[in-house]
Length: 172
Image (tube, rainbow, N blue to C red; front, top):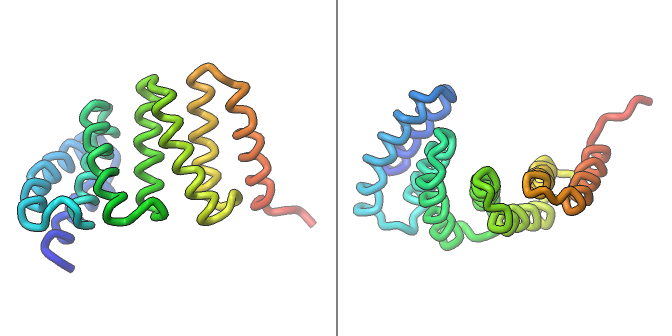
């Protein structure tokens, strides 16, 4: 494990210790310190730098700092696509996080683009009954509901129900 990976890992452990406000503030302080050093030492398009940028966006998102979260999510997405590509679980997670953030900020149209990309990739990679695809279906449907467009949400809720029924245990 490289020094950069250790530093990123340290930040991740701090975030995983709890979801309390102070833990995210602590994580942000760590990432704000680490990120410039990673970029200087390794550059922007490296797995460690991309993960740190993404995690910084996530921490700001959890604190409700939407503008900062969006900034780091967008930056991480550019680099993540270059480093990992579209067909990577971490890329789909970032697309979903960014889409959810935009939906929470009433930017429904922009959110839809990211959420639909995450959904399409997850369905192609793992199939609609997969946990990740079901989660993506839920995100898309919720965005349409928030948008006040239940007629667009309904097909996604129906697909989600169908997928849930495919994986639900049956009584024999």
